[in-house]
Amino acid sequence: MTANVKIVAVLTARADTVDRLRALLDAMLKPSRAEPGNLRYDLWQDQSDPNRFVLDELYADADAVAAHRATPHFQNYLSQIGDLSERAAFVLNPVSST
Image (cartoon, rainbow, N blue to C red; front, side, top):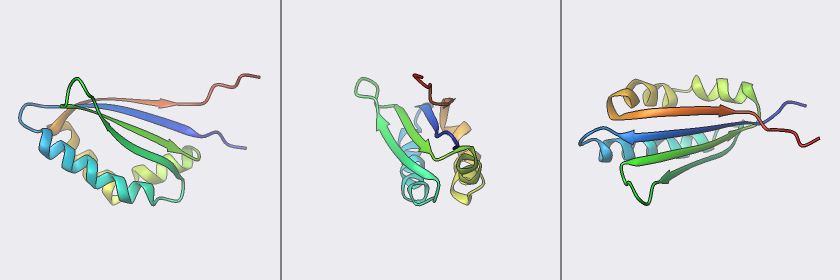
């Protein structure tokens, strides 16, 4: 059995880009959630800093992550995200308690 993969990305809008960043992130929700290997794709906005967003993603396995990264909507996101935000992404594996 393959393990789920979680990705958490923290994105902070560059000066005067918060509206464009929000639009780009909003545009990722529907197509990402529709991907066969996607189990969760949620966007959060920081209560204390409205320029900071968190993407909370969960995929069935590493193949699903690879498929996501190959999609046109992810490639569009990738082409713009560096101009719009500072970004830190963490790719996580589950920790077994046994």
